[in-house]
Image (cartoon, rainbow, N blue to C red; front, top):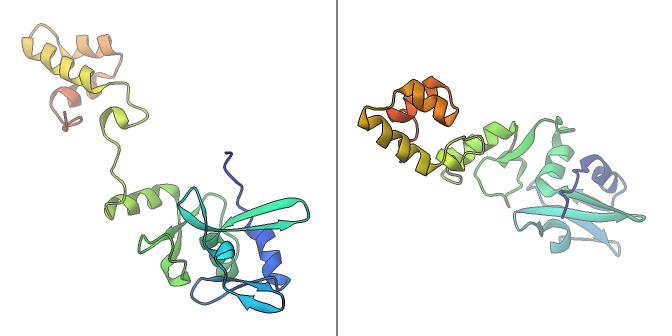
Length: 176
């Protein structure tokens, strides 16, 4: 499934037209048959099982918007393109405006790490890593023999000598 585009502005047209309403608690209401219904399909539809989303149709066009983004848009206006919504209390279902803040992707990740919701990628799990766990074990073993210098090992594994020194002296890859 391709990642849906955020359509807060398009979704705000439903609010402006009186079809949707956003309340002070961050809930999204839908006008149905002349009555306001707080119904789960407009506030609690899960996308990827991760966030509440609002999915509406305008003609043949299907519009998708994370509820938190719509709540922010309603209260504060456009979300800058390079920023995203963070749930301060880490409850991604709590879309109360007091629980939302706009942050960079890196700030959002660091927030999750501070709260223990995400473990920082270490070693070979880090996508830019040139080494595998078995390489680090072998590098340290070879260096211990005294037959391999940091320079020779860095050439063998195609990494900078400063990086190799950090691996050997356990400044990095401490978990191995």
